[in-house]
Amino acid sequence: MKRILIGASALAGILGSAAAALADQPHPWQMRFQEAATPIMAQIERFEVYTLWFIIPITLLVLALLAYCIVKFRASVNPTPSKTSHNTMIEVIWTVGPVVILLFLAVPSFQLLTAQYNPPEEAKITIKATGNQWNWDYEYQMEEPLSFNAAILQEADRAAAGKEDMARYPRLLAVDNEVVVPVNTTVRVLVTAADVIHAFAMPAFGIKTDAVPGRINEIWFNAQKEGLYYGQCSELCGKDHAFMPIAIRVVTDEQYNTWLTAARTDLNGANRALMAAVDGTSPVAVAGN
Ligand SMILES: [Cu+2]
Image 1 (cartoon, protein in one colour):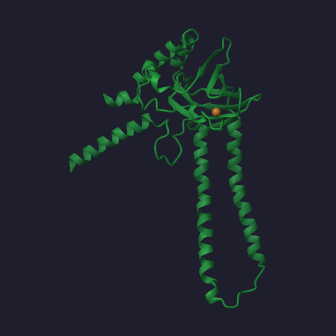
Image 2 (spheres, protein in one colour):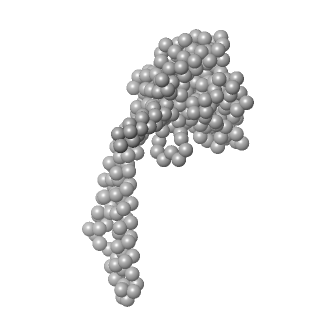
């Protein structure tokens, strides 16, 4: 018995650490959101649960009323149907009730919407993301700008890129050049497109906005957990719409600064050095010891 318990707790530990390492990614049969990495996504999750407290009772109430009416007022036991057409009390209740419910939903909903558009502080980094058919251009807007293209990681390039770990660099989500940002930093993303409408979406950050040619949409995030996060273009944009993922790597300030300096002259080298630094100290490696 004791052995079973030890085995079970070891298994739970392994599953727990594996889950932590992969918390930033979608997984098969996922029913809920990816784990929140920003305060906004946490707020979205809270609002979703809060909304369910209204939706579920209302659905059950309507279902119960329907069932009651179907049984009680069926034709076979009501040969002469009632001619009742108005009831003031019921009409007041079913007008005032929904209004009150909508108010309870509207207030936190507008609070969330306001928070999504108003970063609590001036963004420290501004990155412009331009959607192309079918990849993304990124431009770090600073005195000495840094720009690069990020496309889906081709299976043939996996080994050369050092991205053979399928758990960390999943098929259809991994890219050749990730966006790199420091943890606990407010980042502004200016989203636009060069050809057709795309959409920049990062589920764990709670951001999704259209990338429209000739327009700039502004969003922001403040990732509070290091890791590699994946999103996808979320607007049907042509035949390779499903093949233009978005990958953002959240690292420490120090790792970010080292990467940024190196990336200006050698992006590939900077990415390789960062991967060695980050993947070497990952939760997976620690759990394996
Ligand atoms: Cu697209």
